[in-house]
Image (cartoon, rainbow over all chains, first blue to last red; front, side, top):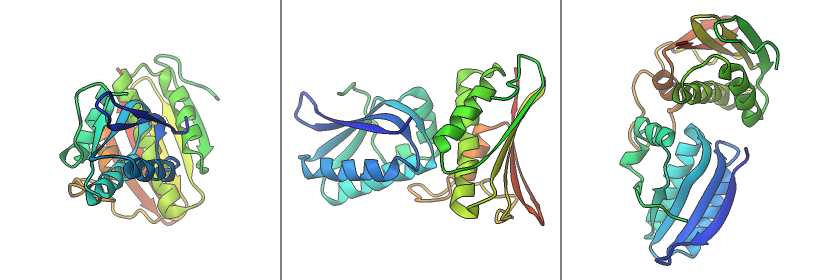
Length: 108
Length: 134
């Protein structure tokens, strides 16, 4: 399923980008553009809500690492929430979880 | 979908690797579903097949073929490219450095599957992924 992105705002005012669908090579450019757009509106924190991510591969991992680095350069912390158990395992095996913060709290 | 394997049965299907990895995963999932892997292992296998096909698209470009086979003991995926660029049979045995922008594909395949073999001959390379059936 192609990636679908929705912009929302957290109760605390943080922008939230809700990801729905497959996070693969076809999603990379779309997500990168949405994150850049989100960073332009984010005061210090940008949440990526991952509950609806049905698939993620190495392209998705690299896209998330790039997004996190882009955010950090602009002084914004990029945080993943709603990470499902299979994704959590993938993020551990790829060590993405040593770079990108993964929040426990529900968002979006 | 040709010949999805019933529980404990034999089955085989093959299809070329085009740009559409989402469609490739759908076909793989449909074939694998009947093999009664637990849901995590099914997701792992589909991810591994998709990674191998992704590598073919990245590095070899053309002539990619996925063959899926099932027998009562195992599920096997062979992902073949005609370019033969994958020659290091030990590739992916160590993890990429933390935060690396590349090098995840074979590492993930080896973590996701029960067995991963890299075969190389003059006419191309094949990644063979094996999952034992319950």
